[in-house]
Length: 465
Image (cartoon, rainbow, N blue to C red):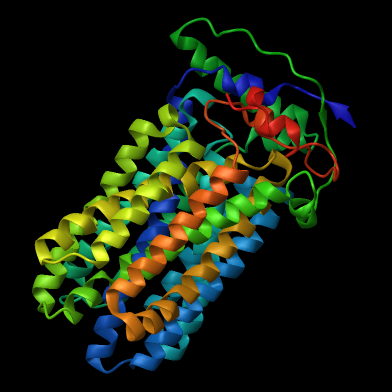
């Protein structure tokens, strides 16, 4: 069936208004709680091991359950997000990790806590896929990168708050309170987000034109309070047809899928091969625990700094070119960190690497990966790429252990630098520039194998706007 209400052009012409700000904070609130739940693991596991409630082996199982849950959650969210809608999926996954977190607060033993953590992981992995994938469908092209970076900033600020509240709460009240905070917060957020609109782009792709038009009219009326809206750019009718997971590997979309997977793998290798290991690396170099945590705290300020840089540059330098430059620079800084001769130099280089890593999160994971796919399978594409990133996150710690045993920190950082260099090469050869382009202009022919989605048109000078 062919029909159209011009959902994309109507959204793209809107000036930023309260409509967009509400969308940002409603999505960001859930993703903040998602990251808070992920980052609380370190403090909670330390307390459990110290009290004798858990062992190192059980702690490792807890982490494995988290990653397996997140892996399955990312893939499931991709399928549900494209079939049932963005709103249904992020409400569903928010309820899962909220209820599982509350159950974890009352777990009678470590085995039950691990079971609860697996279900938390299902919701946690899903929230990231749907959250980053949804925001760009509402925001106009000129500021899509900036607003995706804002979402990344909100999300990753949970690292500081989770660490700080853990420092205050775990010694005095206990670890159960941390899960209770997330559970209660998630359920409150569930009710707050219940009135959040569905993506008009997705509704249009499913032929639900009346629902999409009602949401668009409300957004247009709110935006029009600031002045007359620009005219709508007319586009050809949208083909509403079913798509499947296999379409991501069709000739029209294969290169996009490969690029998104490479971005996810590259960024996650840095996070789980370097970021989470910094305190251990410092202590292995003979620095005391208190001092190593202090140096790590200084370096971790690069997390929000990277997202803030993303806010400033995402729509200026572009996604493809920005990711190539940042990943290449991160490779150089990573290699230099591995060969630093003093703690002070390592701290400065570590801060820079943290900054560049979370700039890659803002440019690549939050913005670029969702842009590469059509509305019909945006969540599937983001989910498949996210699964690859989770697998990299699972394998990276094992890689670090083996590399550190054979060649020390120099070997670890040199390998990470090579991964980043490889990612920049893949982006240079196969990536497309999405900056300031409508999602409809970027999209390949979803569900139509053999059509020219990544053929000559995308690698010609005309498309590299």
